[in-house]
Image 1 (tube, rainbow, N blue to C red):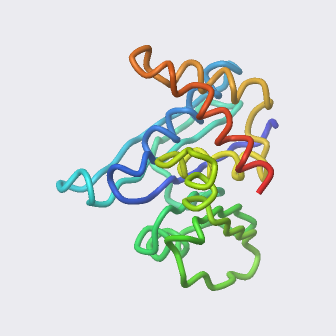
Image 2: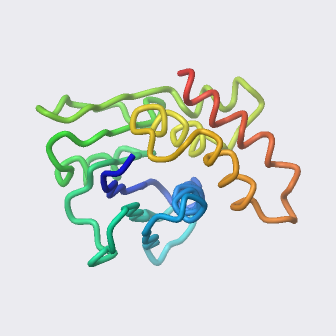
Length: 178
Protein backbone atom coordinates (compact mmCIF):
# COMPACT_ATOMS: atom_id res chain seq x y z
CA UNK A 1 0.00 0.00 0.00
CA UNK A 2 1.67 3.15 1.15
CA UNK A 3 0.26 5.49 -1.43
CA UNK A 4 -2.81 7.59 -0.95
CA UNK A 5 -6.13 6.51 -2.40
CA UNK A 6 -8.75 9.15 -3.10
CA UNK A 7 -11.91 7.37 -4.20
CA UNK A 8 -15.41 8.45 -5.13
CA UNK A 9 -18.26 5.94 -4.95
CA UNK A 10 -21.37 7.16 -6.75
CA UNK A 11 -24.85 5.98 -7.72
CA UNK A 12 -28.53 6.44 -6.93
CA UNK A 13 -29.69 6.73 -3.34
CA UNK A 14 -30.57 3.25 -2.08
CA UNK A 15 -27.83 1.48 -4.09
CA UNK A 16 -25.51 1.28 -1.10
CA UNK A 17 -22.68 3.57 -2.20
CA UNK A 18 -22.42 5.10 1.27
CA UNK A 19 -22.27 1.61 2.83
CA UNK A 20 -19.56 0.50 0.38
CA UNK A 21 -17.60 3.64 1.24
CA UNK A 22 -18.02 2.87 4.92
CA UNK A 23 -16.53 -0.61 4.36
CA UNK A 24 -13.56 1.01 2.63
CA UNK A 25 -13.19 3.54 5.47
CA UNK A 26 -13.40 0.80 8.11
CA UNK A 27 -10.62 -1.07 6.28
CA UNK A 28 -8.48 2.03 6.71
CA UNK A 29 -9.37 2.24 10.41
CA UNK A 30 -8.49 -1.42 10.96
CA UNK A 31 -5.09 -0.87 9.29
CA UNK A 32 -4.56 2.28 11.40
CA UNK A 33 -4.34 4.53 8.34
CA UNK A 34 -5.39 8.14 8.06
CA UNK A 35 -8.83 8.36 6.49
CA UNK A 36 -11.77 10.51 5.63
CA UNK A 37 -15.28 9.43 4.63
CA UNK A 38 -17.49 12.19 3.30
CA UNK A 39 -21.04 11.23 2.30
CA UNK A 40 -23.09 13.40 -0.05
CA UNK A 41 -26.60 12.84 -1.30
CA UNK A 42 -29.25 14.83 -3.09
CA UNK A 43 -32.43 15.93 -1.32
CA UNK A 44 -34.40 13.09 -2.93
CA UNK A 45 -32.55 10.36 -0.97
CA UNK A 46 -33.76 7.05 -2.47
CA UNK A 47 -33.65 7.45 -6.22
CA UNK A 48 -31.68 10.70 -6.00
CA UNK A 49 -27.95 10.84 -6.49
CA UNK A 50 -25.67 9.67 -3.73
CA UNK A 51 -21.92 9.58 -3.50
CA UNK A 52 -19.18 9.48 -0.96
CA UNK A 53 -15.53 10.33 -1.01
CA UNK A 54 -13.07 8.10 0.80
CA UNK A 55 -9.44 9.00 1.28
CA UNK A 56 -6.99 6.45 2.72
CA UNK A 57 -3.47 7.63 3.39
CA UNK A 58 -0.37 7.00 5.47
CA UNK A 59 0.03 10.77 5.88
CA UNK A 60 -2.37 13.28 7.50
CA UNK A 61 -5.18 14.23 5.12
CA UNK A 62 -5.46 17.95 4.44
CA UNK A 63 -9.05 17.98 3.18
CA UNK A 64 -11.86 15.43 2.96
CA UNK A 65 -12.83 16.84 -0.45
CA UNK A 66 -11.81 14.64 -3.36
CA UNK A 67 -11.57 16.81 -6.46
CA UNK A 68 -9.37 14.57 -8.61
CA UNK A 69 -10.12 10.96 -7.60
CA UNK A 70 -7.56 8.21 -8.09
CA UNK A 71 -10.41 5.70 -7.85
CA UNK A 72 -14.06 5.67 -8.90
CA UNK A 73 -16.85 3.15 -8.36
CA UNK A 74 -19.78 4.16 -10.55
CA UNK A 75 -23.15 2.43 -10.16
CA UNK A 76 -25.20 4.31 -12.77
CA UNK A 77 -24.84 6.36 -15.95
CA UNK A 78 -25.37 9.84 -14.43
CA UNK A 79 -22.72 9.15 -11.77
CA UNK A 80 -20.30 7.76 -14.34
CA UNK A 81 -20.83 10.72 -16.65
CA UNK A 82 -20.30 13.21 -13.82
CA UNK A 83 -17.21 11.75 -12.20
CA UNK A 84 -15.32 10.23 -15.17
CA UNK A 85 -14.46 13.81 -16.18
CA UNK A 86 -12.79 14.41 -12.82
CA UNK A 87 -10.61 11.32 -12.33
CA UNK A 88 -6.86 11.76 -12.15
CA UNK A 89 -4.54 10.28 -14.80
CA UNK A 90 -3.80 6.68 -13.83
CA UNK A 91 -7.06 6.36 -11.89
CA UNK A 92 -8.83 3.01 -11.47
CA UNK A 93 -12.52 3.05 -12.43
CA UNK A 94 -14.95 0.18 -11.76
CA UNK A 95 -18.42 0.49 -13.26
CA UNK A 96 -21.62 -1.57 -13.26
CA UNK A 97 -22.01 -2.58 -16.91
CA UNK A 98 -25.68 -3.46 -16.25
CA UNK A 99 -26.61 0.14 -15.46
CA UNK A 100 -23.99 2.03 -17.48
CA UNK A 101 -24.28 1.43 -21.19
CA UNK A 102 -22.08 4.27 -22.45
CA UNK A 103 -18.54 3.66 -21.23
CA UNK A 104 -16.02 5.51 -23.34
CA UNK A 105 -12.35 4.72 -22.81
CA UNK A 106 -10.36 7.56 -21.24
CA UNK A 107 -6.68 7.76 -22.06
CA UNK A 108 -4.52 6.91 -19.07
CA UNK A 109 -7.45 5.65 -16.96
CA UNK A 110 -7.94 1.96 -16.09
CA UNK A 111 -11.67 1.36 -16.62
CA UNK A 112 -13.23 -2.01 -15.79
CA UNK A 113 -16.93 -2.66 -16.34
CA UNK A 114 -18.53 -5.76 -14.84
CA UNK A 115 -22.21 -6.80 -14.80
CA UNK A 116 -22.41 -6.32 -11.03
CA UNK A 117 -26.22 -6.19 -10.78
CA UNK A 118 -26.59 -9.44 -12.75
CA UNK A 119 -23.75 -11.14 -10.87
CA UNK A 120 -25.39 -10.26 -7.55
CA UNK A 121 -28.84 -11.44 -8.69
CA UNK A 122 -27.52 -14.66 -10.25
CA UNK A 123 -25.88 -15.55 -6.93
CA UNK A 124 -28.91 -14.81 -4.76
CA UNK A 125 -27.38 -11.55 -3.59
CA UNK A 126 -29.81 -9.02 -5.06
CA UNK A 127 -29.04 -5.58 -3.68
CA UNK A 128 -25.35 -6.30 -3.16
CA UNK A 129 -24.04 -5.07 -6.53
CA UNK A 130 -22.35 -2.28 -4.54
CA UNK A 131 -20.25 -4.86 -2.71
CA UNK A 132 -19.56 -6.84 -5.91
CA UNK A 133 -18.15 -3.59 -7.37
CA UNK A 134 -16.16 -2.97 -4.18
CA UNK A 135 -14.64 -6.45 -4.55
CA UNK A 136 -13.55 -5.69 -8.13
CA UNK A 137 -12.21 -2.30 -7.01
CA UNK A 138 -10.19 -4.01 -4.29
CA UNK A 139 -8.91 -6.51 -6.87
CA UNK A 140 -7.64 -3.63 -9.02
CA UNK A 141 -6.22 -1.40 -6.25
CA UNK A 142 -5.44 -3.61 -3.21
CA UNK A 143 -6.32 -0.65 -0.97
CA UNK A 144 -5.98 -2.94 2.07
CA UNK A 145 -5.05 -6.51 2.96
CA UNK A 146 -7.64 -9.09 1.87
CA UNK A 147 -8.27 -10.20 5.47
CA UNK A 148 -8.82 -6.56 6.42
CA UNK A 149 -11.58 -6.30 3.82
CA UNK A 150 -13.50 -9.16 5.48
CA UNK A 151 -12.91 -7.59 8.91
CA UNK A 152 -14.25 -4.28 7.55
CA UNK A 153 -17.44 -6.09 6.43
CA UNK A 154 -17.77 -7.51 9.96
CA UNK A 155 -17.39 -4.01 11.41
CA UNK A 156 -19.68 -2.25 8.88
CA UNK A 157 -22.72 -4.53 8.91
CA UNK A 158 -24.94 -3.54 11.85
CA UNK A 159 -25.76 -6.21 14.45
CA UNK A 160 -29.41 -6.12 13.37
CA UNK A 161 -28.32 -7.34 9.93
CA UNK A 162 -25.63 -9.83 11.03
CA UNK A 163 -27.21 -12.45 8.76
CA UNK A 164 -25.92 -10.41 5.80
CA UNK A 165 -22.23 -10.60 6.79
CA UNK A 166 -21.53 -13.83 4.89
CA UNK A 167 -23.52 -12.62 1.87
CA UNK A 168 -21.43 -9.43 1.78
CA UNK A 169 -18.23 -11.47 1.95
CA UNK A 170 -19.54 -13.68 -0.86
CA UNK A 171 -20.31 -10.53 -2.91
CA UNK A 172 -16.73 -9.29 -2.37
CA UNK A 173 -15.36 -12.59 -3.69
CA UNK A 174 -17.69 -12.54 -6.73
CA UNK A 175 -16.38 -9.07 -7.55
CA UNK A 176 -12.76 -10.16 -7.16
CA UNK A 177 -13.39 -13.13 -9.46
CA UNK A 178 -15.35 -11.15 -12.08
